[in-house]
Image (cartoon, rainbow, N blue to C red; front, side, top):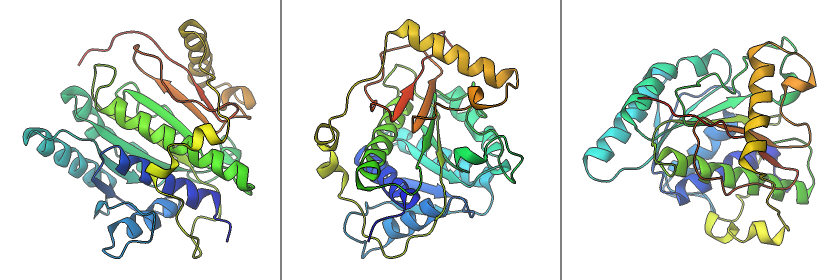
Length: 289
């Protein structure tokens, strides 16, 4: 049975997070975050399906509460000498705004916090549809990195494999950044645009993260990150469109890509990219805590 793109994307993200050392996830569930909610339910089971990672899952009704719980778990791990990133999951729209108090705390304290926010698909952005707040960039400048990942829809086997690879790459980058790979640990925003169907129907999980590490080479991926100057210029264009309310396609992520990322700090070039799948833009400049 061919998996739904959003279901596959959510599962691939969780696999990559667990393989990168994430142990705990706090979720304030909602309808748009259903792919993550179902995947987390599998990951929390003792009799997990093959391919599902082992995660400690905490459920909270209120997003602000969920974010502070995740922040507390991350602070506790650091105090115990075992620093690791902790994730919090929300649904779309105003739910994302409720993360900001905890995000600011994580920003000032340098605490690795992963903010996984479900979103409507790209086609519904800027259309006046319900709960289509412009989520990418909403938590800036307090986050170290914003990733805008798109699961796509009605994809064939090759496109599904590319999407899973891109999701895993993005998740790994998010964890590295949150833990301070660029010398500045702190919160990272991973926005996940899910299209219907949002609920699994008995599809098996994809191969686990360790087996999937060779996926990139098998698919013939290529680096698409350019020189730092070109990336900064691209980021400036993206921010200008958003900040000045420019409508239309120019204000949206590249229609040929599955993701847009705007790291909020200078540093080493990111390692991830997929030709025609992921586009990254860097914004230089120091931030104070």
